[in-house]
Image 1 (cartoon, rainbow, N blue to C red):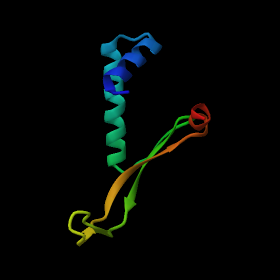
Image 2 (spheres, rainbow, N blue to C red):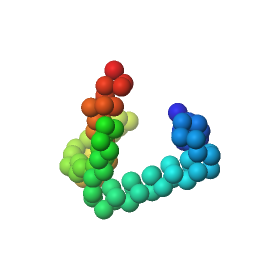
Image 3 (tube, rainbow, N blue to C red):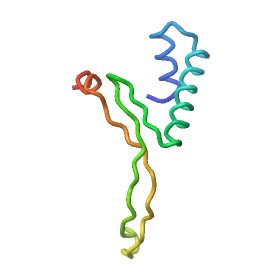
Image 4 (cartoon, rainbow, N blue to C red):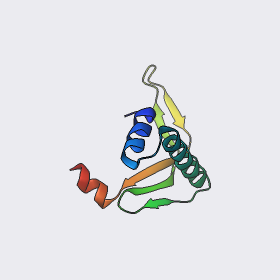
Length: 90
């Protein structure tokens, strides 16, 4: 499902117009991005939680040449599904 299909599904399920559903989805994405950028966590009970974790620097291998490369440390977004979401997917 891509973004436009998600907007259409949200609009149909909630009774909102597609324009309002797109605005709501864009607002959710914006707020989520800003919150994670600050290093905070977002927890949606029953759905899951978004957090930022630090990935340590590590050694890797260039698949083309086989040469060792150094992969720098960085922050990554992590999503952990909630119990209700897991139960609905099974």
